[in-house]
Amino acid sequence: MKVQKEVGALLRDKKGEEALAKFDELTESVKTPMNKLQFTMMKVSLHSIVGSKPEDTVKTLKQAMDLASAEPMMGNQIAWMIWEMIDQKRLEKNESLLNDALKLAMNSADKLEGGSKGATLDTAAHLQFALGQVNEAVKTQEAAIKAAGEDASPDMNAFLEELKEAAEKKK
Image 1 (tube, rainbow, N blue to C red):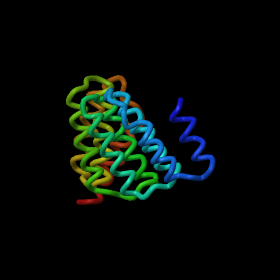
Image 2: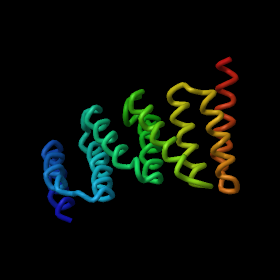
Image 3: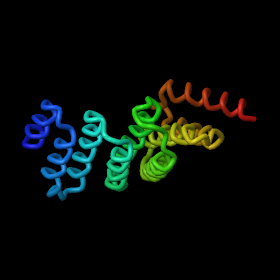
């Protein structure tokens, strides 16, 4: 509550840099890994709100990935968010960040089963595609659909078709 109140007041006053500094000050004592991860994700949003430099946003995203490495579902969420931010041009394409997100997604998928594994492999396939690894993305997406089984969404199948078309064009 204190974070929301104090940081929110600075944001309303259009003091973005001060809001980020206050956020760091108020959250530096957080020790619990999940709480630390939640605050780190809030900081990613804060970067978007204040229009931070891309390198500052990337630094915070990398911190979030490190914190999420032990939580496979959170790892998938962060990896997907990175893909979305780049796909939606809210963050410029950054191969290092994409590779780190791909590694996180693949490691997370190894710890999951069923629909959750399928969704995480789907994230990995999107990241591979963003990196230009079309053939690998096709294989990963096929594995995603297989792992998801009945939980495979029509979007997963549509993305597989998109990947196959891209692979054909690349030949």
